[in-house]
Image (cartoon, rainbow, N blue to C red; front, side, top):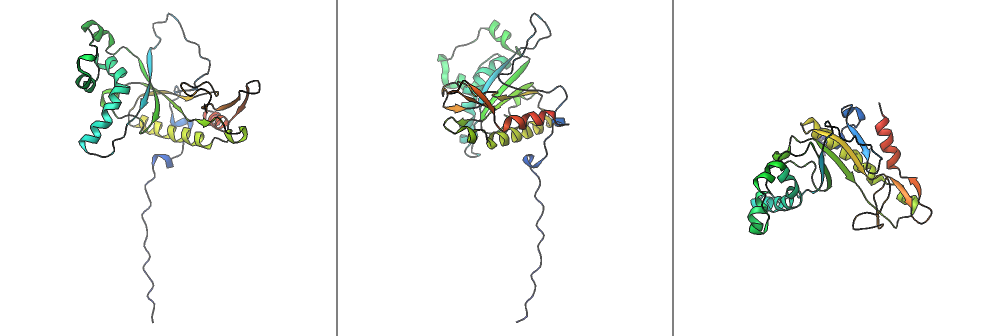
Length: 240
């Protein structure tokens, strides 16, 4: 039987995503501030040119589906966990969903308080912990942001394995790529901090998780050993 060669099919080249793009320090403005939480910083005092801001933890909620009920369900915890603090310093009031659901149990601002709160910050710091990034809320699009990010390790890992923190390096790299993309879309970002310089006593988990870019041996005189993410971030900052 004569075999007819099958026609070759050329598959279209997939469009590169944000994560496929190269990353370089030059993607950020020259005055963009990088740092790690725990880095000693000096602040000027009694200087009218100083900036005042607030840092908020953000749990970004992703709707289970596009249905109005699911979208509303995702917006409510965002309002209660994030908007609770951010909405008053933007509009002088708590989010409308909080007012509707909490009712008279929610304290009200006096008019004088509301006016003092509105626009009372120069920059907004965001500590994103999960979900989509950055938050797409039209009420806050023009605010200057300082971003902080983190990845944790199990404290029971042996030091040799704990120092090979590939997940932290990947998280930093991907996070910065999305940050560049957001800035190109007009989001005004002024700085980026990594949580954290050293392993520490962490909020409600104590020493059970390690967030540092440097391993701290709590059982041996607090000796410090850089994890692989530390020289990666250092080299990124030094890159031409």
